[in-house]
Length: 555
Image (cartoon, rainbow, N blue to C red; front, side, top):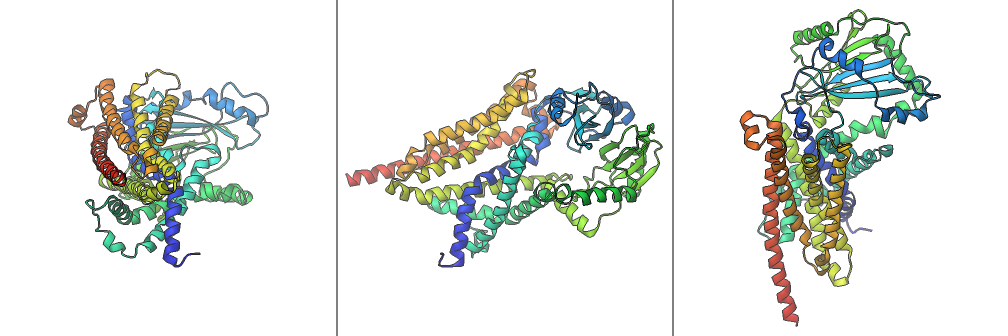
């Protein structure tokens, strides 16, 4: 079929990259944004703009919050079909209470799980969640969309397609194919070391685009390979091969029983009421034990399991931000007495490798410089894919124009939508976040509508303006949408100032980098988009003059 193995790899690289590049572009771009998802949350929710706090006192802050929590009516209605009989007016049997925070989260997330009476599945649990100000326990609005962690981050790994986890499967398949595309790319480029240092922006457009494609692909090759591989590993056991809950369900249940006996952490309630000892004393003891081992004592996750039952226990997990590996160093206590049950042992060699790879991918550690390298790596992947789209279209559009084919026009419109359109959509949700009234019902849904609506408009605009591609010319939508990016990025910064008073000079002076960093990034985006639009305009004028000259010579 192919004269050589290298040409076969070139075909694989081109067509796999084209077909799945649209998904990978979203994974790279929103993955780069997700590196600072919590900071974007602070920008999007002004009421959370204060300094991160440690895990608060259980008795003073957490317990009152847990005791007033109940599932939302929507969660109760969704559960009705899985219950025999009526749903209770109040859920009283607590499966677990938990609280979570990080060194980048000023707010505290709290969760409560309850047994569901008469549930068809005896293990059914209904959940409630909330957001607290950890300084005094004041409930914060929990219906506001966390644009960074609640939208951009899920877009990175699941495209927000939740039905049957379809988005996670699509991204996972694309990551698997990406590994093949990376290998085939290396095979294609025999002079890969030279391409590491090669970028000729003054050469012909096709040559400079290919240079940039090769450069961004080679420079970030280890980054691209590692993150595609570890992303697959992270989701493998949960989504792709969930053997414990499908084919091996019986063995999974047996393992849970054995684990409960060996660790002393019961999986089931005893059915015997019991009180609760001082949780704050348990937390303090856990911190002393970590300190004795020269470990940072920040509590990241606190869990009370089987609350009010003789089998209840309290688990205190360390934030672990002092190392790359994603570790919890859990310490567990008997809830009724405060007696130590267990300290999690050191991980096995295989476990340590898993913790390191997972931690390196999810980057919960304190290292701001490394975070910025993650952003640059993600953006390099996005640029690599974007230049691949451009090279594909540029190489073929004149041939298609001569044959009267519309293929290049369609691909170019999709490329515009995927590259500049995606950026416009991200800016659209930020602008909507600042424009929509604070008390608007279902405000988060309207912000999502703004995102998808902006993206659809970008698609329609790219298709409408793609006619020149059929004549072998550039699509003016690239230039026009770059200009729109500059306008929306500046508008987001101005709207943040107008609606909150937190203008850039004020946040820089106060050293509040979550908001200042987002504003600065938006202004840099506007500058890059403006420069890009000017370059594209100059090239379009030059190309138009050449075409006019050719047409005149044939007349």
